[in-house]
Length: 307
Image 1 (tube, helix red, strand yellow):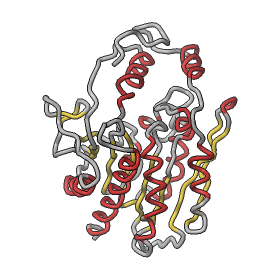
Image 2 (cartoon, helix red, strand yellow):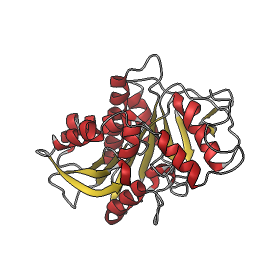
Image 3 (cartoon, helix red, strand yellow):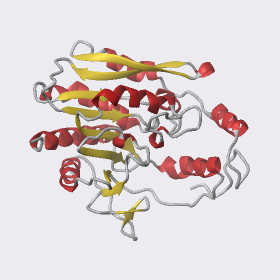
Image 4 (cartoon, helix red, strand yellow):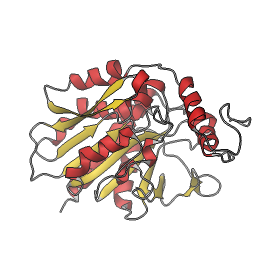
């Protein structure tokens, strides 16, 4: 846990351009989007339609093509199931879980649903194991028209024609120990606010939509994931990350008004997964499998309640 001042900025003062530039200079490439993600997507082209829906242009840091993977035999009569991962680039199982779903389970829904999967919304963040984009903006607070985040604006544009056609949207995330040691202190420093230490839930949980909650849908996903990894318990206040637990492993946010990815469409069934990769009892393979289990359960529930 960080208790000393964040190394960038002046406590109590929001960052300006100089501080954001200093923060950006600290971010180093530690893995390859082209090698880890784009290559894996290329291998899917014989079974799916792969679309480049945009390009991130971060000047000296490079240009990043953005890819969406669609069912090859798209049928306008079938419901649309949307899967997104890597909105926060450091949340590895969101990216790898989406790819693993495409590789291993997507064929199960041929002729039953149209699948649209965006495995890595934030390639710059993926390479740097970073929550924000290169402009120190959190994409997952920026999914709205005229978004200040390139990543969010590109996804909003991709999904605009399908906004009222999507039946289910599951957005794949992680909550990590680095949320408390790095990302929350950085957020407080950027916004000129004091850092308030919190806790990291030990286990998997979901974020439902507080405006239009779907408790049975969330429960179906929790039940499936519980076969793969443990579900996060409530803390002593009956909360997870400061929000009341409304059912085992489930909290609620107003998804659309907060600019969260899961609120980007008018889907009836929406959820955000939160895997805990730092648990001593969870391996990377288990985290990826939990994401796949969540996706399959979400699609299965939506299909069985599509009428």
